[in-house]
Image (cartoon, rainbow, N blue to C red; front, side, top):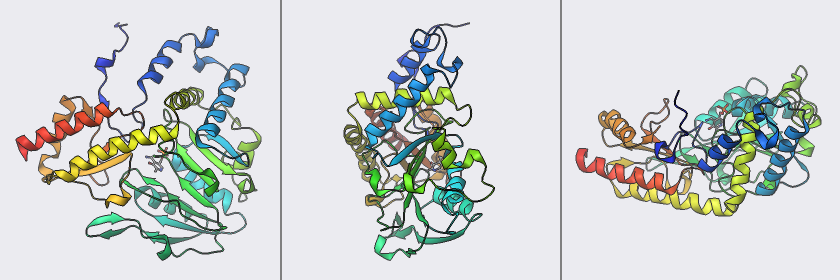
Length: 369
Ligand code: PMP
């Protein structure tokens, strides 16, 4: 058995959309603490979720989340199972109990999934859809949306992970609560939580490993759900039990805690946003400068986190991916639904990863373009 610890040299640049790259420092800390977590003589995976030691993680993670995002005191922070996908059902099951109408904005793959699920529970109206302008995807200005003033909520996906399209603004829906899927952009930049009724995000992009989902919900939305809603899908019950209705994914929770502490050491979300803008700008500037590559999104709506691009000839895709892999640039294939390439450059992707990718892309064009 090889017991040599993994070195940084053995690590590749992982552009996966999720589960995604985690900060090296966090992985090293987890590695060090694996066998004996804080002098307990046990791994954190082996301790009871009801123990004081684990409850300390629960409290710290919630406190750090509140601090980093500036979550006001009239919002609850929950850590739930089921990923972003379960929120596609939990949101309507809980928020449509009294009023079955909800408006959805359709901007790509994940908002479509959310719409399809919500349609099982209520009267779902599509208020707006992404439009192509000069063959580039854009989000229509909010003045053109058809919002219903009596809807129970408006749902949108702040960053479409597959399509690489993001909102440069937060929709203003007046008194109607705004529900945001922030799975692929949470903690990438500061947000004003008070603009939202509910925010949800799966952990496996910017927060930690898969298995745990952050939900931030305003107190007035924690109400009785539709009849027959299972306890495990009821926000009210999760709030009462402080996310400990059953045995949670304790290791994922611990890892999220380590990532949030890493974010605080990095200086918080203003600093992380500055780094993310710099990384994304480098990559988009390069793509725009080279006719061989193309990003399908209008500049104002381009994602800071997920950069899809195509090559001039799809026949070169496989060669691009295998050569990239030989250079230690992994998981660049676009989502199976749209093909092409996609570089996900979450918080934990170092600038060196983006620079190495650009060098490779430039070299590839020289040889194959
Ligand atoms: N919403 C968005 C924006 C996503 O990117 C994803 C996953 N890639 C999901 C929802 C679904 O998340 P999960 O796989 O955690 O259910």
